[in-house]
Amino acid sequence: MRGWITWTSGFLLCLLVVFMVVMFSLNSANGWGELLGIATFFTPICYLISIFTLFPYVRATSSGLVVVNPDKIFRIPWRNVRELSADQGLYVELTNGEKVYSFAFQVSMIGKFLRYPGARRAVRKMEKIRAKGVDSGGGLDVDSAVPWRRHTSFVMGFWVTFALIIPSLVRLP
Image 1 (cartoon, one colour):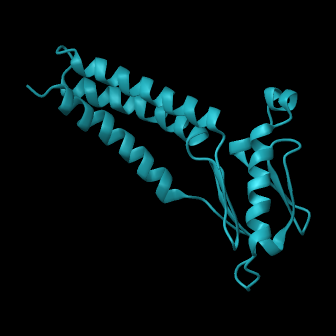
Image 2: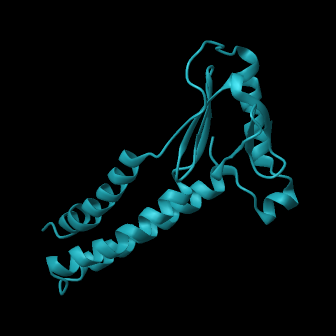
């Protein structure tokens, strides 16, 4: 589950950056050295856009929740979940009192005004999955990890796309 407005706006901003790289590639005055510099400039911009808009999500499974934020991935078994709340964005209160906030459904002024409809829908869906049948087996406690492979692959993927793939496709005869 993702905040669709955030995801859509991030996707459109990344498309805008791709369009700008295409425009730079169409200019025959720009050599490959300039295009590599442009790719190096646009890669962190598009990466930052994607990390805050395309990465974050929440997924509910029979064994627990997966909360993916830009900096960490939390895997939370249902037995460690005390409460799911959408009062101030979406967050999960753990049995030890700690709160794990979801960046995909974060606090906002518009959300406060509208009472967080997306977060409320997400909580209802998660509660339905939780009610269907919870895997109460042992397993790990709350696990949090930094998704280094995902971050590295996104940066390298953007750079290769902006430096090699788009310019090569645009400059085909």
